[in-house]
Image 1 (cartoon, helix red, strand yellow):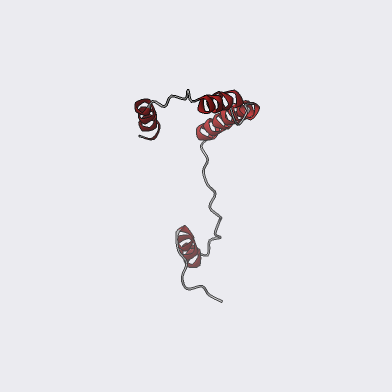
Image 2 (image 1 turned 90 degrees about the horizontal axis):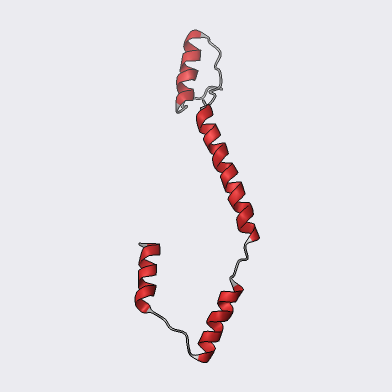
Length: 92
């Protein structure tokens, strides 16, 4: 059985091997050691940060209780200008 259409770098190798009888060797990706060490350092940093984040609570319960109480007693002050500035700074 003959395959009539092959794409990419493989087709060049197949055509070459048909013409000169050479054995086709698989392509191996080249990995730079500098890049691999940078990725490794990044992974270490992420793992360290992940461990620290896992120790933090998901919700600041003291802050929630403070806001809840200020809503109940009517002392909650909402500064719309400050809120708008924070939203613009966060989301652009």
